Length: 400
Ligand code: F3S
Image (cartoon, rainbow, N blue to C red):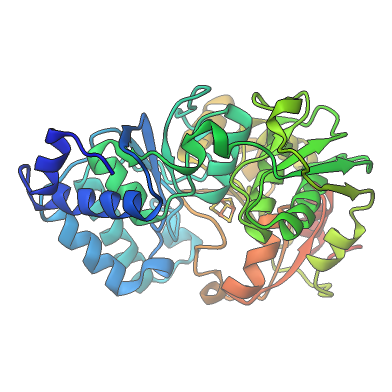
């Protein structure tokens, strides 16, 4: 990989050990993927923030890096942490976990990363433009940025994204290049999709079929932004899809963006997706909405469904601090929390230690959440529409 004189100097340690380490990581990555050069990025999103994922070794690694005094050179957001950073005590998070989690956050803050712990940075003041190069690592955010916004990012690891934050650079390969953004599959959908959970079920089924390929959807009629974020999140979980096209919807979808001889898959029924993501549990003790983190539109819908109701089991709605603040300013937060539901920020139920909070079963309208929670947290999961999830929050039971 060609490096400029300035980049070579950084690699030699001209500006200290912290940035030298970041350059070593990016250079190694560039060599592995045969990148020709490093390119500047406009923003970064760093995953691997939860103590549940990082453990003591990860905490020490970050501490060591932060002690070099290195600082972020571009706008850099964080992925969800393992708990609500302000409200963790009231929500029952264990003190021992919280202390370690706060140390991780402190080290990231010392490196000037913004404490916007969210998987939807594009809803929280960081919406990249068409063609903009970025280095994001949360899989659902990568998918949304590449596909819905037309920005350009690989699916970075937490470490490579942090290296990009500290240098403002990323190796130019993969989704940064036009030639790698064409569809490998055409997916013809003839089912009628009505909700974010339908898009999740579709995403789950397609992700399993295409793995890391790029699907080109035909037949989807005007999905909303929230439906697209559910679709991408589920495909990134059951497969490793980092980009997709939707005909007449996403900015780079046109017949020329399909590879010659791309196989055609047909989806005419979502039942298999729903059944594979569902356990048989009838008792629900946690309802989790907001995967990916909820938008204002979703909070509005939740508020309407909860109007005049009282929840009978724990209902946590996860979102970014940014959206939560907007909801508070508009009075929406009070309307939701008046039912006994809680709007939780900074975290998500996959990276939070929910198994230590006494929960045994969960209902969710997110395919990504339903996919990961059984293996990551050991809870039994029910997956269905938002209305079904809200109903189970009111009754504590799952009605098929
Ligand atoms: Fe976000 Fe967690 Fe879902 S990071 S996409 S809420 S699994």
